[in-house]
Image (tube, rainbow, N blue to C red; front, top):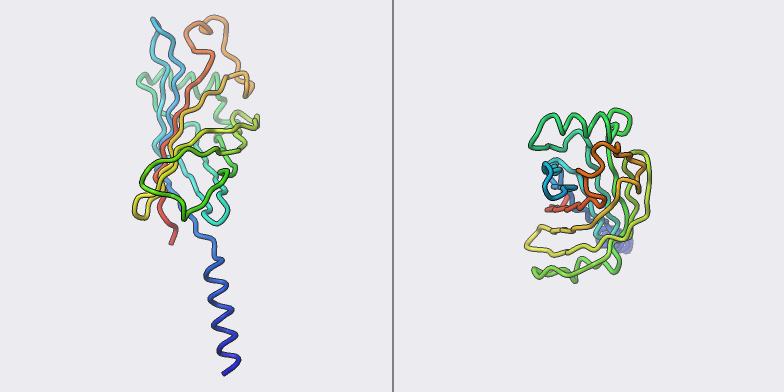
Length: 182
């Protein structure tokens, strides 16, 4: 009888300490580097993978560079071949930890948090604190953010001939709907 009691206590401890993870494979990342009076420089990727460990607030996201879609196919080709070198650097990775994260404190009302992270793009890694909005509705956690980076941050060179047609700061927006991993 004692053994049965200890085994049930052990299993209940393991269960309560189990890490719950929320994930998506359909996250959205959009970026815009448009300059007024020139052709729009904007792309969207709807196949971004992201995962959140609710036990400790650790977050990671992976995007395939060739998954970004532009309005103009030629612009997409130049983006992949001339700027992002996506055959050599096929993915971008964002990973970090959400400061003060607590699954139990999430509500339907979005609250501001900071994602202390590293962003790896084009083979370069940069530390970056990203402001995010975080909320939980039913069994879905929503993460939204808008932040900016520069091509120079990631050793991406823009040729002089088109430099004035591309913004110096690239605005990035992320939208993730994470569902509990079962």
